[in-house]
Length: 490
Ligand code: DSN
Image 1 (cartoon, rainbow, N blue to C red):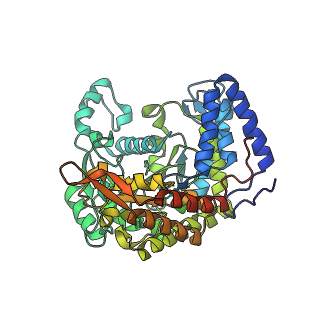
Image 2: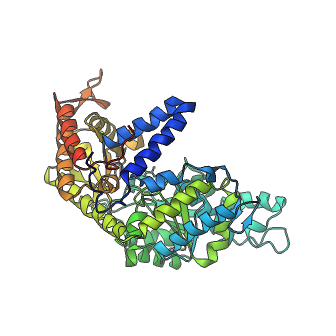
Image 3: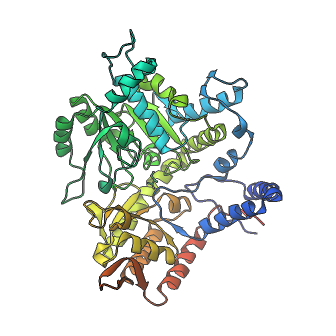
């Protein structure tokens, strides 16, 4: 068998060794529950066979994936390195210390905490650390209690009402913010009184002067920056100035663009780490690691961040922390900078290819890893566009656009991201061809009419043969850039 060369932007692996490892693992698993072994194999086939453009997904390396399937999973290790609530944690200490060291070195951070299980967890750790560090509680009864970590039960009762007065200012959901930045369906929206900043209605861009005025008015404890659907860079130096002016703590959630920070595409004012008091992230998006989270902090927040478990987290997942260490080690390799740059170059190619073919993009382009399409110009909702694209083998997700008239369920937008296909080795020409496929699907899809004669918001028809033609064209692109080249489950 000829094994295609690994791409220049993904770590090389020995295909024969990895194939043997996975075949043997699936055999062991299949002996107990063959349907699970089958589902694992089927997931690889699905991932290989679809044009994955979900901005928050990626393909971790075999080394990262294999690191998670072992007996590190069996160890309880609540606490921190060298200070555990269980005996026998020496290997977990090694793992956690290495992951934290890689994170500090990679991002130039004073402190790293690698236990969070997800992005929500990482944000909870950060929010709690800010409350613990910044909220002075002079009215509390316990003598000497200055911070929330030192409270009696009575103090807690007082605190519960006091916490209601704390404020968070975060980016609005339809401008690209995230649920965990103070919105009602998430605990952050219950813990904090929240106000949202949006984007300029004409340009779709962040308006720092308007944000400054809003912060002066609202005076938040936490100024939250970061996004999941804003296709532009954020000036974190400007954000910090605003935070300092109103005595707020700047927390940046870089989950989406951590890979671009790690790969030094976002530098200077656009790198959150030197500017924010606390930075949170997931590890599985553009950073290309295992599913999980981490927190980086300035020294004054380090102790409070380290209390994440058991304050708001369950016991750490040592096998995932080990995989974070491997992924962070990969991100410190020179090829990761090439990868991060390619992610952005490819997003620009995708954006330009779409706009050239008449697709409207929020903000008129991108300078990060994602583009946000406004599909209302095709007479479609985001839900219809998402389903039609999926029929054609293109995996995306619908997303609100600013001031979206269709609301958060149907939406008017489609979000696309380049991290996953860039890992496969797609280049600018491939993304231009991908743009052509997407534009054709949108142009060839129409809403059906409801019994009341109105355009449906969910149902649609596609031109004859369009889905099949698109699938065939997508398969050509995918075949030219195989996922995990040479990996053969037999
Ligand atoms: N669910 C992630 C995303 O798709 O952006 C964010 O949490």
